[in-house]
Image 1 (cartoon, rainbow, N blue to C red):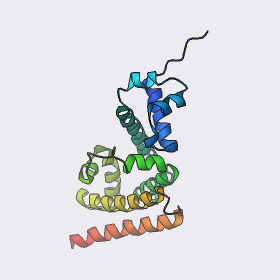
Image 2 (image 1 turned 60 degrees about the vertical axis):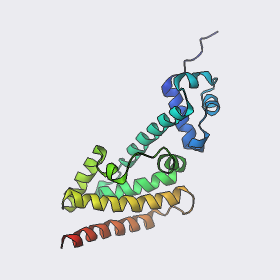
Image 3 (image 1 turned 90 degrees about the vertical axis):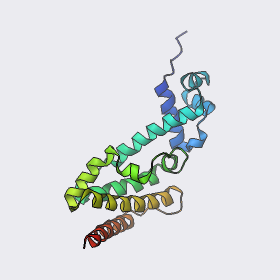
Image 4 (image 1 turned 180 degrees about the vertical axis):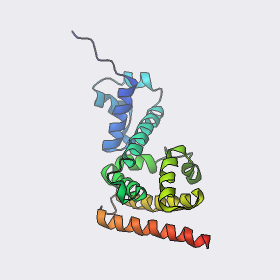
Length: 190
């Protein structure tokens, strides 16, 4: 008889991530993860003392997946900010369960909007925006926050099945919000 396959911690996290992706994070529990891995619940509880710890690990994996998705810019000539905003909204359309897990659950806490804008992960994006539109880094942050809040609102409505995804319309609205944010910042300078 062949030896039983060893269930690693990474395999458990991957299974929990897939459950969150397919049916929602609320369905992550020892039984569903064990079923996905075709094993007993023992390996799951061996690697994670609580399901809460497993959900946090699945959240971290989903967060990394989301960041990678955002930065996959197909055509930078359209504008980095527009592409990232569009990717953010596309993610909500294509991965609604993950979007809700990441941004509409109790796991998205501890980060304020001001902490998020100062995160080092955003530095390259803010720098690219500053190069494209000029102005101070504080002005660029104001523009980014405006676009982020606009894109997040759009994405939230789509992720909750309240709005059909219409890419041309979304691009038009994102451009208007971006141009409006730039104009507002320039008006403040006067």
